[in-house]
Image (tube, rainbow, N blue to C red; front, side):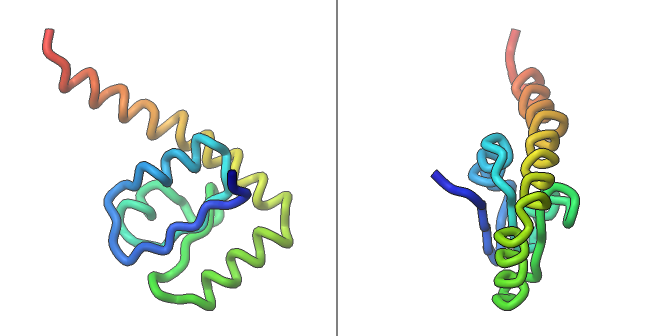
Length: 100
């Protein structure tokens, strides 16, 4: 049970937990590292911050808590990203790797 999802990694692949957060319509804040920034488009479907920049992360968290409508927008756009980009990639990868 969560209201927001924060992933402050210094290094990441494409995290399953991030994909799950998008599926569950959570507003997302992530560090701007490969894997996360390949999924999150800053100020479109979530917020990104420079890795290790605690003050920037704090500002992003405060912003979403104080701006529920913006948090809801990121939640909706994140779910759209999941359905249009991530879900299809997974299905395509499964099809390519299957043997008939």
